[in-house]
Amino acid sequence: MKNAHLRFGWLTYYKRTDKTTTTFKLRLDRFIGEVLPEAPRRGKAHLISVVGGDTQIAAVNAAISMDENFQIEGPGLEPIHVSLGRNAQTNRSSLQLSDRKKPLRHVIGISEDLINNTGSTGRTILAHSRPEFVWTSIAQIYGLPGMPEWADWFYRQLEKHKAIIPLLGIGCNPVMAKGDKKQFLKWLGDGVQRGILPFPANTGSVEWPRESLAGIFNYSMGEGQEVTT
Image (cartoon, rainbow, N blue to C red; front, side, top):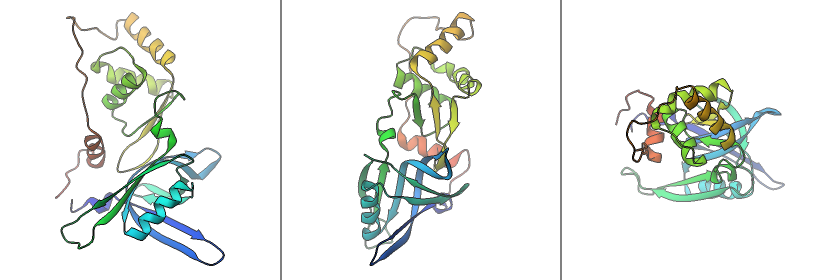
């Protein structure tokens, strides 16, 4: 994509020891994080995706495993210091570009919270804020009964109870949904009793929309704007 770099952010790594100082900047194409309440300019990262050379990517990979800090900044995001926390996991790969002899190196870091994103903590991290995606994800994670058409109503309930919180994002529009299965079932039960949430006229299986991870991120990047290639 010719204009993809305009949506990229930057990851800055800085480390100083008694003998050496290491500092470099890498292109950041995806980021999900949250601000720490007790420290507005510090945050917790949940997803980091960066590209660069062999040495820099190896250093970032090692820094993630040691729970070291990075500075993140990008479109609409002021510089903030973050770490992925303990027990984060990484995945490394290579990207071969047609105009480069050597491939770019790529590393993705994922926090323990995102890895174990099963709703057991009452905090569900989602990569997009679209009501259809939020409702489908919550219904599947918590095993809730329902219909795809209930998405807008359920999202309004999250907003009404202040249970949907925007997260920091680059290349996506992440949110956190707060609540547990008991609470969500109560909302649904109230909606059904009041006749707001209709059931299908015919019996049978319910077809839920399927969306790939690539589709989620591509939708988040475009937000209805044309992307030139």
